[in-house]
Length: 500
Ligand code: HEM
Image 1 (spheres, rainbow, N blue to C red):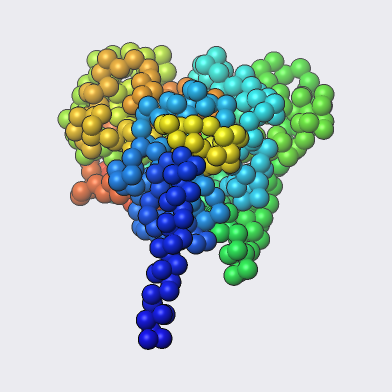
Image 2: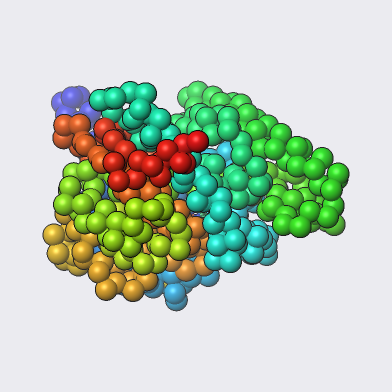
């Protein structure tokens, strides 16, 4: 009998707890939620899985509909996986959802809550966004810095040539080389200088931060876990943050002395402009604000673009006829006397299709960045309370087989005749006020790097290419791509020329 109570009472308690939730949900007109919800944990138990979060969310949406309401420990969350409802969130409710959640006591990824990507919607965010657009990311600025992008593309080619010459018959690993390429592009655009050793330090710091952030997130959703030793993450995070701050502070100090020495430099770098602003308004443009802004920009640029290039190349090697067609296009347009440059990109629509198809299958931020509601609103006819986290599953929308023919296949042709954006089906850079400000730069640099590698080398894959996705905020490959590369005979002179 005692045993019976032991089993029956908790089940009865859980049942009544959920019946109460069910009626509260109906009365409050909240969106559908999975059954059951556990005391304290809510629906967190659903995500103790090896699957990446966007796939787990997509499975829930298939069962409960395009708007799902979750209780994630102490936080409420809305999961949206329909383009029409995403449109409602980023048009009618755009201002309400223009906020970011205050996770990790205001230190998401170790960034201060006032940094561009994590800042609450308001004047400070608007100002940081304006400065980044005006002095770094506008089409004019991106074009002005095309010499840096072209120069780094040549350095990238040179690295692969060196590898092929020094290691005949060996396979080259892409991940790190592509990360370094993008790090060099963005830091040179920001500072006007090349920080050769910076890429390696920055890569170590960001991978440590991503790892600790995953651990620290537990405290966000289950605050009581602090009592069970999870506090350690705070210490770990502080140590890594100190390393990263020191890294950027050193760069700032170096530039401060340049600015003080020469006030009349003609073309000022983004960092020099920020230091000028600091001299005018030292309190607002503190070192911390400048540091966080620059770190967010470097962080936002490197991982997203390097994983896109790696996924694109994985598919190209897996589909040699697509690689051949892209190479033929480049040969026809550019010829054999020169390397591809940014002015060719607009004339290579198939290359753009390859990049778009990669971003469709593997949006680097498959759930965008989290948004949070700053007021009550309605979404899909349901009530959404203040303070609800919003995750828009762009991966689910872009891989929905009702909207895309052969959705799981890599078919760049599907983007032929596609003009710019189709926000109802394809929005890898987000949507609305908080959409990515770096889209223009990202597309240009990814296309230039891919085009250069396609033009200059013959590629050979090693065995079957593993397309498994790793868990994490940015979707990268579990196993880094490796392949054999041989400089093409037709461009050998060109590469030798570059190699001098
Ligand atoms: C393939 C490359 C890239 C992709 C797919 C991408 C995608 C995104 C997405 C989905 C968001 C979140 C939008 C939202 O929450 O609604 C975002 C935000 C952001 N991205 Fe990118 N991004 C890329 C490259 C870049 C680059 C090159 C930069 C800058 C140098 C950059 C800087 C940022 C910043 C600062 C934010 C935060 C914006 C804000 O909160 O106001 N990104 N990006």
